Amino acid sequence: MLCGMPKVLDDQLTTMRGELVGFAYRMLGSPFEAEDAAQETLLRAWRHGDSYDPGRASLRTWVYRIATNVCLDMLRSAQRRSRATDFTCDGDFGPPLPESTWVLPLLGDPPAEAERRETIRLAFVAALQHLPPRQRAVLILRDVLCWPAVEVAALLDASVPSVTSALQRARATLRAASPGSATSLSDSAQRALVDRYADAFQRHDIPELVSLLQEDVTTAMPPFAWWLRGRETVGAVMAASDACLEDRMVPVRANGGPALWQLRPASPGGAPEPFGLLVFDFGDSLISGVTTFLGFQEVRVG
Image (cartoon, rainbow, N blue to C red; front, side, top):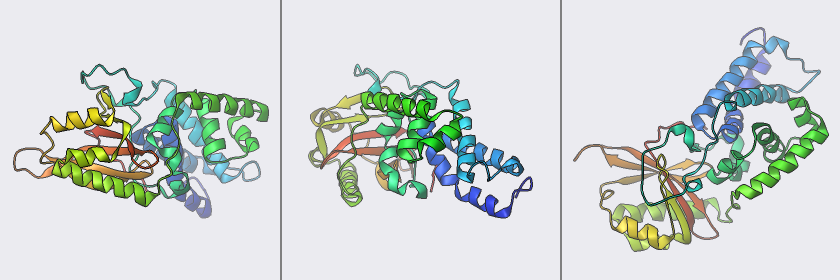
């Protein structure tokens, strides 16, 4: 407990960490930056706890004001994060792009996000990055966290009409960014597809693997701005390569759904080590996208 903050408030702040990471992840598009933003938010809250006035705002509003300001500060000099499919692909891998280029995956299931998994999909978080930072904050607070307009206005030191106007513009931009719709598949159905994908991948059974993919499936491998579209194309590329014959897949969760660690021996006969993290998108009945984040370093939330 710091700076005279009552223990009950100190305890409440501690329990908010997971939801703050979820908020910051949507704002920033990086689990590493989200972790930093949540930590900075809590540090500022603890440091200035004696200035909190419950007569002026709820603790949540006060903390989210801090979190929003932290994220806005971090976004002032940041470039917009993207997905590989936002780039033109000419079939060449080219040089790897910096980590700051990409919307990165969020490992685990933050407890506070259990009912909002749709809004931490990679495609949705990438679409959010098209919004100006303050509009991004408005849309997350209003449409994701379901805050009343009057509370969002108080948090941002804005009027209710300006918040409403910002939300309308943000929704229009989000639609144009085409994040896609949420899958109708249950979590267990998604897991079954990913388990079958892992089994087919490890057996190098390309026909079985392709049968799990939508006809217009996309696959990408950040940090390279390279991607493929179409299950026949994906199948042909995988069939032509024997680089993955010794790889193993380990189930995990990322961005609200089932994912896979791809493990590969660092040397012949060596122990398998993380090579990439596979994050999936789903259509009505099949896998609609596979993004393999090569060299991804684990940051787990939840």
